[in-house]
Length: 542
Picture 1 (cartoon, rainbow, N blue to C red):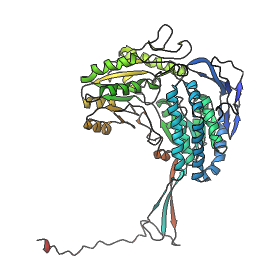
Picture 2: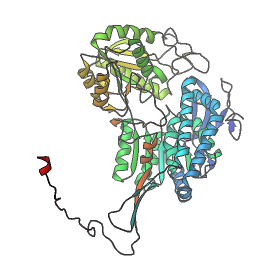
Picture 3: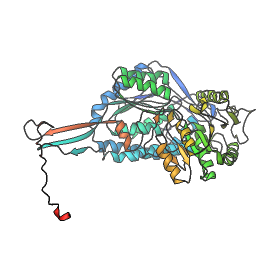
Picture 4: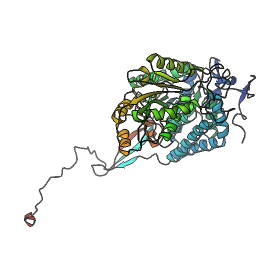
């Protein structure tokens, strides 16, 4: 099979240091590729090699969003009437095409956002798994038959699609998360307008092309590029205009609250998957070596740029010294670089310059709180680089791994998410204190505990306020058939993935089918059954 970018893509006259051509990208509206109506564009660059331009993409405005929304609305009647097994077959085709193009997509994603090849491979596989899971759900969009309290009457329930869904996802999981959202959405019969992440437009463009190659009708999924403050805001504003029936958003809690407010005042459903300050507790009974591995990966995998990355590492005082010795040895040995050119790196660059700037502000917060900075010197430069940094610091956006200790509950850095390679460490006196600390932040996305005391594990999973909990596992990791999402400041209770996500993209329709040929009124025309005391001879029991 040809490379994903070899067929039907238009290239620009840009000389890249990587030797790869730059793509001229477009919006996809009603199945047609289109520039922005204003003609404005922006570029996507490789964060590991800033002189490597992947492509140029439309900077979409309100007119572009409106055109995409109209296309989705026009496609909705036909798509929602398409039999669900047929919709499932198209989704299955998407999964098979993703398999065919997997290697290309993995390298494209790594080039565009800097993830390691191994991580990008796992993420594209998550998109494949999502397609294969929901292909079969096309034959299982079950309703129920319900017994009526009246004769000659049938009661039934059906899942019905909501309509036009606005999809906005972050760039740290640019292949898995949009599939988490759009695959169940279209499975239920909805249509979508997808605002791609600003830092991953080429991957989004390629994925949308694959969706249409799989047989998706025009207008069912419409792709628009642009900034969150531009195209993204116009999509949210369309809720007030009555053009959107559902919003699904992954991103910051601050933006999520704004979206929730807009949807709330319009009585429009929204799915909000937001930030986290995910706690990981280490107890004395834990396998310390295993716990070190889990905490290390949770804190620094993906350069700490997961919503499920480790925030507060909560160590029982009795194992604090032993754990820290082993943990810091791993931190100091961290291999960092460009996975496209350097082997066996734990993490690569930040997602973009913007994420780098925001991360450094978070480090300043930790320092300002008075936490002890054990390791990390901010941005990696030619003059300030850890021993196992393998890339060229002048080429990309790389950060040291950071560790702060002596963190207490009254510090801002205890409560606030810092999106990047940093772990804040808190000491706990006992299990109850550790559980209190784990629940003390305003977030509730992911959590974990390392313990071999089964009662502690039970009390933790029943006492923690979080959407997900790992026992003797890290805070990260998700599977396509398990619900994903948080509580408190991490979300509004909706879930992605698995059968549970169907609740977010459909509503229940109750049907009352009267067969008697006359009006029968529930609760009023029901014959009462008189209670009669049974005549029982209890003398035999004497």
